[in-house]
Image (tube, rainbow, N blue to C red; front, side):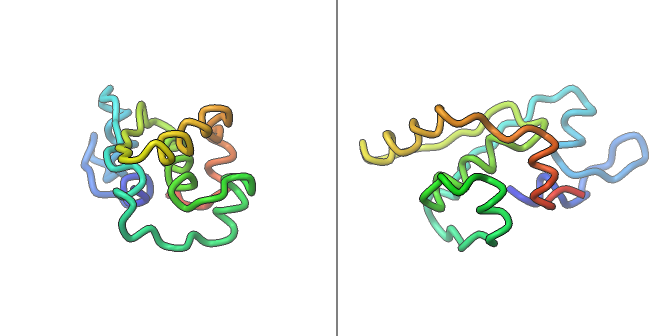
Length: 111
């Protein structure tokens, strides 16, 4: 997901832009799939990102979902869940607003 935000790979009007920036400039609504990496290979996030996302987020899966749903220019973050516990955990995130663009930029992951 971070690459779609920070790595310039798409040519638009003679500029190379990150995928989500390019999509927005072209009027395309970007949607993230597998927003929590299908619970595989969730790496320990750096402390500055954990802090920036909110110390009240207790699991890496919820942090990953909060990160994804906060990406400026992203229309939706899709996530699949197998167990009722995961559904409850992820639904609890709806009581916390996504980061605004300025707070997201403080995470230091965009170009």
